[in-house]
Length: 538
Image 1: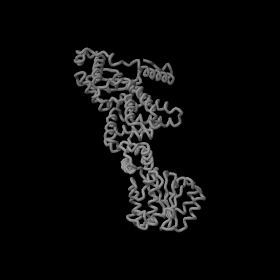
Image 2 (image 1 turned 30 degrees about the horizontal axis):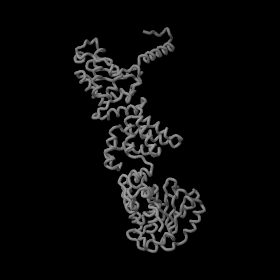
Image 3 (image 1 turned 30 degrees about the vertical axis):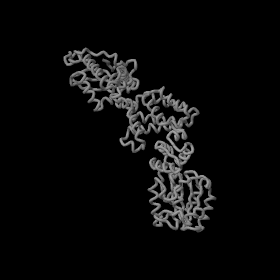
Image 4 (image 1 turned 90 degrees about the vertical axis):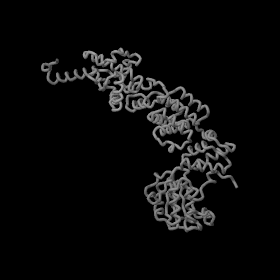
């Protein structure tokens, strides 16, 4: 006998052989057992999920002489010969005209040769023309009693509503990775090959829920190997990227190591990896990181090995969910741009460089991401936070006016410990001393608050309230400082820095020049309205 491809050899022959579609199989078996066969079915779903296979099993089951529990026996005369006599398969992609459907309408009147029903399986039915659908409607709604239609399609949204309403619709699900791995392992052993769990997972992941694609990949791997299939063999065949290389590249991007990220990408390309595959795998890897960072039960979603999941979980702690989501968006945009570009490598490299750059802009989303990155910094690593990573954190003040923390002069210790003894006439000096003591304390204990406050202006210390002004362009910073949790942290820091129970009041202060301009504009309007002689300026 001539060689058969694995996906043909392992095509299901009975309902019990179908995996991952129990919600459909149960209904069809019950209909066969109770002899309540519908005149028209619509099977829809992704490729390789079993639509045509189930259609053939149903066609044999409704005519089987020895059907048991709704299953065809595959041994009687009807099951053995009926597929060539009373089961008619039509490819709508190549028979999509009105003439072909008119011919079908004439033939449905003929009685079946062997069984009870004549079954028409129309594959890729969405390819029929509008005229062909119209010609099929009446026959589909009221066919002869001996005719059953089974329509199969991957794009049910392209079918007219008039056709959908005349069929019993069954949606085939994509197969789960777990189900596919179990089936692939069985097929590999039957083919005389042994495959490790990582290789099985890689094939199932790439097949994207389609068993036919998975079996085709496995067949190539069997031909490539000498009986032992590893993950490296699968990646070599598919041009995929090793998980270790993705882990390294993602780490460089998370920690903003631009040169290392570009070198890692270059190394992948030198080894012959396809740039589109690298981009897709990197997007999927960041998605897995985002799931780990956002979901407590991430393992049940990702379905990874224990070792790979633990490594992924550990790396997800090094970046905020905001940064991971931004990385996915940037890589997805790069993937779209690469399709229309003659230089896809440049597009991807540009995206990697942008990911390594600190977020810019004064929008709230960018500021939230920078603060979240600070708050999620792991204290046990003792890694210094670079000021460039949170530069321009909501402020629009001229950079030349910024003062680095090392340049701030703290008041003498006796002044800091006895602020309440200062002369009331020196409130400005007291406010500055208190403010500098606060910054000196925050730079060691709470860097997030420090970088939010460092460009504020102490106004005065009135009683036990320190008034701090933010420039009106830093309104977002003021909003963040007014949050209850930050106000509480600020009060504790003030008490620790000054030894007194002092609270802070944050407000937004307009620039003096702009205020003067507004006054001048009002005066000018008054002069124009009342006349110069009637306006007195004091």
